Image (cartoon, rainbow over all chains, first blue to last red; front, top):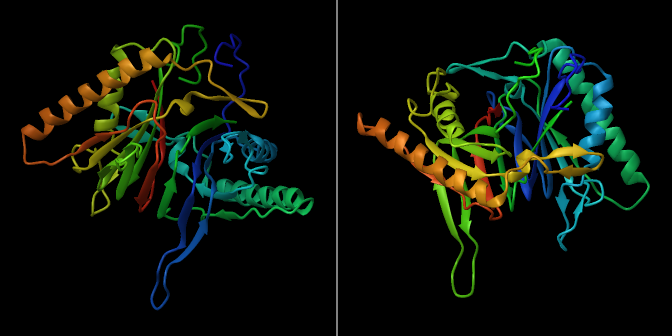
Length: 172
Length: 172
């Protein structure tokens, strides 16, 4: 793609960063008066940071979901690389608008980021699609895959343990 | 840059992912017979995942170091964004060759990654330059910034706590 000499390269619609984890914990609701903060947690699996950009459409959702669920990025006990569905492992989705940033001088610019309302809509659709796909996959066999996710627009208070983040960057 | 209509766009030399942390801990030497594993740790600061690609040259090193040390990505207690040098905060560098990967079907390809020897050379030079720059900066005033780093080619056994990873992706 980098060598594409035409001007017809489709505009970027999303940026995704993937990391493998042994466990991860994310706050989904900050503490408020009389209520403690709420968290979700996954065990061995994959952390997915996702950011939608301007012009992102619903069609991109299935592509992202398919890529992250089927890419062979998870190491089995014998050292073989399999998909998160085949591991099987958990999935934690973290909305991460900062991923859309472009460094300009010393400051970050987010001109390419999708608007908040459109971003929330796509994020919600993405989660539904992802959960549906995982349920379809696990229904066929005796697998247990948890799909957890962060709250769009919130501060992502987060901790992670990994025996190798094996960080990957994907563009859609 | 995305709208550059010419074919003269310089080839990508490095990919970097930045995350803000409250603390982070990285294994730099696995346990061996009679010896426990060795770790480095930082407190509040920035985790930097770095991957050099084919064709990367020494010139890129100062650009990467300058960007990560001067970009205003760290939040002060009053919510202002300042550089990691101005925070001041610690820096943890993690070599992460997987960042160079391109998803092809279900498998990752790393054709664009720099060779291991050249990568180690650049990584070592990058660390030296970064440490020198931080020392110059901290010598002028009463700052305390720790620069820690992972072992090139090792498995990056790692844990992190953050109150917002504020993940950014940079290309050089």
